[in-house]
Image (cartoon, rainbow, N blue to C red; front, side):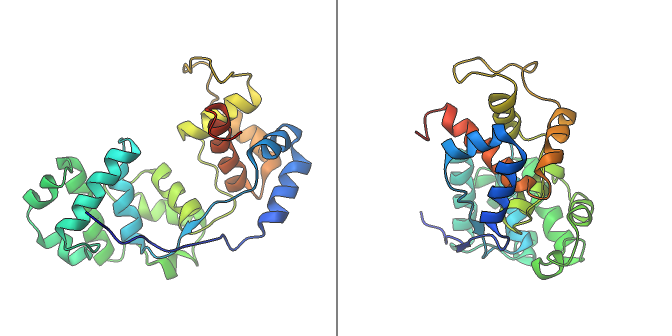
Length: 229
């Protein structure tokens, strides 16, 4: 089973300037950056808004490997290419369910396709001219698309430099490891994880590079897991 891989590119913003500004503004983050290494985020540059959000819906509440398998099966059921909104609306539910999609996800994909066709979901070209909050407001009208999903698209597809996903588990855990004394072998319990307000307060010093700082919060989790020496 094979699927087309989207090409990737580096963000358009000045990564070196962003990292330097974060180091200068936040000594604890500077220590993490020194340990985690170079900022290496890559953007999926070949996906349309519809494709990016469809993939996000498939991946929701699943481990990465299982989600990737289901996503690949869905693509394979359309002949190995990502379906257009029109085609996705035309196929029977059985085809989507056979790929491993739940009923709710099938409904969400169909709503995404319908709202892409009626213009609620902007094209990538239009989205690039919109503010972060305007994109979030527009896309969260789609069934199954919440703020977190759009924030991931803003960071990993549109390359926006100042997005702060305060509800993301990895960001919260990385923050606890970096600022709240969580140790790599400690059991993670809700009381040790930061509130959105705690992250937002610290992140005032990260502006206008909060996407880059968030990426390093994820890397803090990798350091703790021994994935980065």
